Length: 241
Image (cartoon, rainbow, N blue to C red; front, side, top):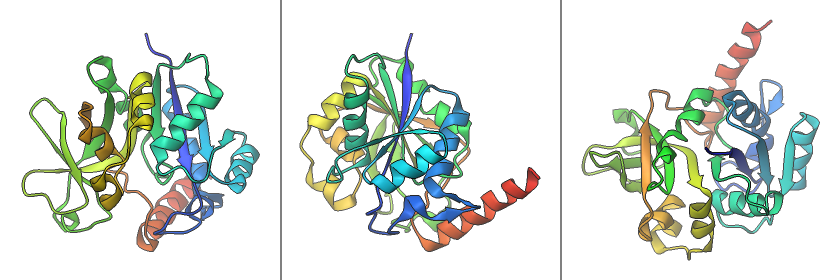
């Protein structure tokens, strides 16, 4: 039996779209939409690990739980590790899901699917990926993942793949011990060059399993992707009235 928790890391200092978590989408901050998707997934408790007091405030106003973390932590998974150590020192949660804070349109079933590979105790980290459209092959905002026949990740990159690849989605499930190990590892050159934290795990031999889904849920990391999320969530909001 597992006792999962979802932790959403967020910070205002994102290089490609500054202030991203607080940008308005359909009347609410982006990070609130991500928090709502996590709640809708029904996996377990949801906590936002925030680098900034402003993020804590908007989540608490929405009725959620947020915890302040060191703003100098290098990656979302490091932030998740710090948050879970602070809120669960007794290690009651044996599975931790990192839902990156820039996925306001992700389907709740996709979030839940990210946990499925962790049923195999030999898997350290799980993630999800979907179809890779041809126009995304050279887009460095789109992370590509290559997998083997068993569904284990062979590599992640922002560059065009030399072989078959999938479009990676920023959700990671960790066995609790694997998350603690990950956070203690040094950052490698490729992780820093490509700004892909999962390469740290790959470099140190951790097993990353990929669940294939149909929902690609693009991250909001450009002005164009922000506009697309606004259009989609505005339609959803108007459809409920």
